[in-house]
Amino acid sequence: MADHGGFAAFRYRDFTAFYFARTFNALAVQMVDVAIGWLVYSLTGSAFALGLVGLCIFLPNFLLALPAGQIADMFPRKHILLLCTALSTSAAIALFIAAASESVSVPFLYVLIVVFGVARAFSGAASGAIVPSLVPDEHLSNAIALSSSAYQTATIAGPAVGGLLYAFGPEVVFGATALCFGLGLVSYSFMTTRAIVNRPEKLSYEYMTAGLRFIFSKPIILGAITLDLFAVLLGGATALLPIFAADIFLVDPFGLGLLRSAPAVGAFSMSLLLAHLPLRRHTGLRLFQVVAIFGMATIGFGLSTNFYVALAFLLVLGASDMVSVFIRSTLIQIETPDEMRGRVSAVNMLFIGASNELGEFESGTLAAVVGPVPSVVIGGIGTIIVAVACARIFPQLYRRDSLT
Image (cartoon, rainbow, N blue to C red; front, side, top):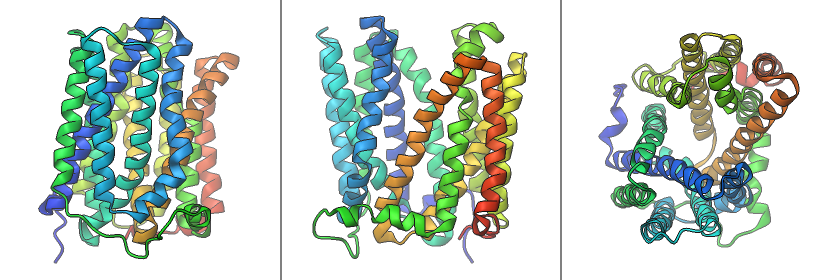
């Protein structure tokens, strides 16, 4: 009988090594993002310069998604993760040396941000594809839930730790970032190297775009990605949190930090619950239900005038989003053959990453026209409409019973 314990995936050394590497790397990413943002703004005082930081991260992911997916299906994914983590470690060390010698310049920061973006593009495709090979099929959903909890833990702790360390100087944050990347590098080294079956001998456009064709040929995968894409695109309430904190809830930066952390706390709590109580039946229906709940929580937050009520809605928002991510990730891994997981994972990252960026842009633009409260409420209503529409457009996904 399969062991369905909440930590069953930790019985396998390869997954345990991957889990700790993912935790260290995600913590490093969160810390360096906070520190670079502060440093760029302190050097320039320009909101546009700060916006370029996000662009320098987004463009490598956007431009390299398809080749990164093919690379992840051509070469051992462990080796890709080691190389990308080594590249990130080197960039963090360069930041530490520059900050310690007080020779940091904004162009230099942008170059290193692009380096981080390149590393994330290739490591994201490889890490998204490698999990099913680390555990038996019966423990895959548990492994995905635990892996998600690692990321959410870093999302909660990373910004706070980075902000605290920055008080002692940016070089301290960058040193801690390099240390975390180095620990991730060591953790990855304990994983077993696995060869990719049916791998191509060279890069080709046809092979590179096979992930796109595969997704469009699978209504269940296409439906899950489409649903998540538009839900994130429309429900971008978190982009407007500074406005709500300052003008509606009248709280200080610490209060804004609590608002920013609340969705991650909800997601982390739900990821632990899913690890111990996995979904067994009616998973397609549950996916549409949690997206609708995400929309309702967005509306509730938008209409809130009390800070603590708003926190509660953000907790629900994060928890429902975690269920959606968990179901979508598991379905994609189960429905995709191993030799295509890198390319499909890369396309999934491209769509979801783009929707995050565009969702923030949509929320900010709409808020400038109609105000922050109507913008959030309209986004929540739109998310619910999308859930209902996708249930009709993708009946195979709606009727999906078991995850595996």
